[in-house]
Image (tube, rainbow, N blue to C red):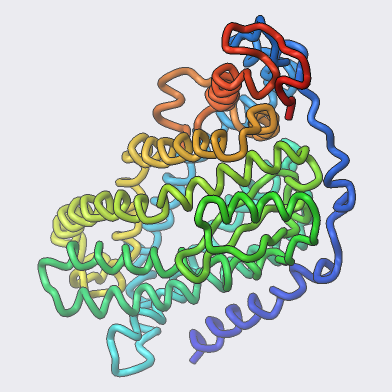
Length: 458
């Protein structure tokens, strides 16, 4: 009963504080919201369209908008993330060792046998596991998610507000763990040695469900979503959506400024839950051209079916991962199972081992995962440039993202650590697009300037 009380007290407590996490924002607009159209696009002199337009010079003109100090700060933040990944893995493996060798997982399994249904008990174990791991990793989470973000000037929350969001995240994690382990262990108990294959199928199905419900039911737990007011920006975004077959009748903005100063937008969900959203930082920090360029990029993900493609790609990777995990799990349990109190794959006490093995697998697969995502992002970049036809707006947005992404990585860095094109690559692509469409700026194909009547300048 003590586990019952602790588990549900933490879940209910975290859910109850969710409304306070967005309190005060329900009927408010972000600071400067009315100034959306007042941010003017300033094209650097070296990137202005003309008869002598040069892609490399224009690219450099945008990159030079950042001061050397800003570049050093951005590089330090991003490069520090390389080590964060390693230490996060090692921290997680240490926790798994405590759970297994200390027989904590075995005791948790025994104390969460609350029903006569073993699979449902595995779900209860998942709730306790999620809470236990969240508490043990809290010091590291505070450093990476709060202290470090504030040190680099990227976060805006007080600690109490951050901790409320952490509590909401814990509640969501607990509920998802209950469902996931309930379903997975129901499968594991029935399929025997082929558990790794069926586990990958179930994992993929759960991923698709979360992608579908997250925009509508999970994201609003952390931010307040409201329809974007009538105006030129909303009309232009919806026009882009209609022109590209996106079934959205509204555009939503959300108050990310209460947490961070990063710009962001997305076209999220699947089928009827598809939603076009952009945060208030994008609205207040970018020009209309920049907003349009970013939203066109996000629409590219939808039009190019990246959600489904990534589900397939990661589904194949998940099958490989499960196969590798099954191989290692079988050998490790054969050697240490008695010491851990783990009898086999159908025993929930072995879940920390499965998680640890997957953590190692995906850490080793980092270049493959990042390349898969980066390729989709690059495709969306090209789609957005062609759809919005705002290369300068896109380039300026890329420079804003350079606040926390290293602008010019080396080829090895790019291959291993980048899940998006680098700032340099994005600006260069935008300027290349601009060079191929100089007629839009009143320059003929021969590079000669023409009168304003013969062309237009966006």
